[in-house]
Image (tube, rainbow over all chains, first blue to last red; front, side, top):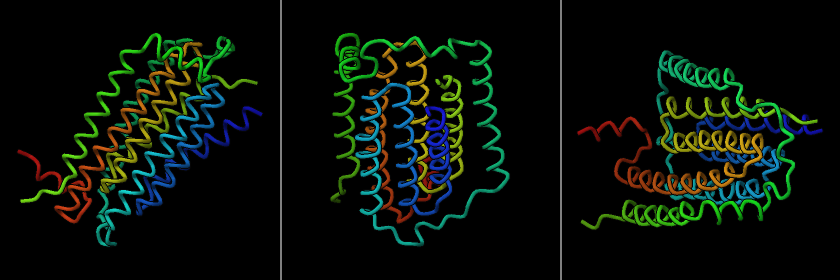
Length: 169
Length: 101
């Protein structure tokens, strides 16, 4: 059962990812990205990360994607603004090869070390991934980073207002 | 039956490759930002997978931080995008080479 769910949603996530980078229209890309984020949220549930899965849907698939769609509609793009000459085939192939080289190198390093892959029975502990569990970890062990996050958000808000403001002169 | 953590890590790596390819190859600024989101999401999946494998919830906390940073980054990126579009009527990232000093 779990295997079937994993493979179905992994395939959906990959299909969504491929659609994000292949559609011409940003709105179609945004909706494909929602598909990927939602499938990832299902995989989080499989990994017993229930609270994080809810956060993923609320914040990522909800707020961030609304922000994208809102911007696309706010810009009121003309159809010629969406026409781009694509990069050369040689550039595309070499970009893909370079990325595969880097990712493959790090993946091979990880798999050579073996890490602690394969045993998944460790975490059947009490409260793993629930609101209480994540909250306890967040507010006891990581209180300072959590507070610093608010400064980051404040800086982002001020930055956005300054950048997007209409210049009057 | 349980699926090994490797499956999630491989999926995460493939999603990361797709995202990085989109960042390098697409010329539409909005889609480049979305590909960045794809890469961050792939990293989050790896965090959660390792967190499950080690039975430690630090990965969940880190993922929440990562979502916060992603939200801030998207907000600033889209503000820049609106500003660029109102100046140049185009979303082509190649016009940004005019920024070089």
